[in-house]
Length: 193
Image 1 (cartoon, rainbow, N blue to C red):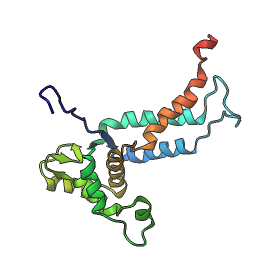
Image 2: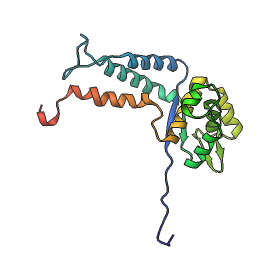
Image 3: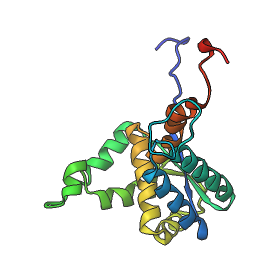
Image 4: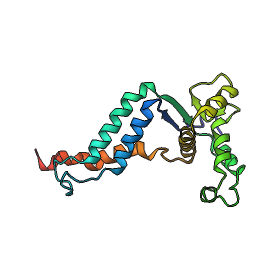
């Protein structure tokens, strides 16, 4: 490498997960169920036409509103991508368990990788970058206090951020619904007003 050449610095991908608290958990779960069960039709069950609203857009708007209201009460956990080879070595350390179809499908022992990936903090690299923990023991205590659902949500985010995907398909869903159905209420510019 010559004096004028530089190595580009990569910013590791991050994903922030909201861990909803108290009654917010149930309210948001019900709203997410409403989104999942909503139909992209009008009140008569017919396909949408220009200007129609659907139960999908209404359900998404309600869920998004609840999430905005609950966000200040949520614990926000940010996970960060580890270097590729380090992540690959972690996965290799945890081969699938015999007879476990989930492990077989993913190609690793999901429980053991989840524990190690979320607790990872070595040589200046760590998976959970926020909130900041005073020690490995305090981070482990935090992880141990999570519900299975919350722990799984964090693991899925950490796994996907390392694989280059989008951790939460529901987070992406409202954007897609808006792209698909939100445009029905206005005419494209080329058609005029």
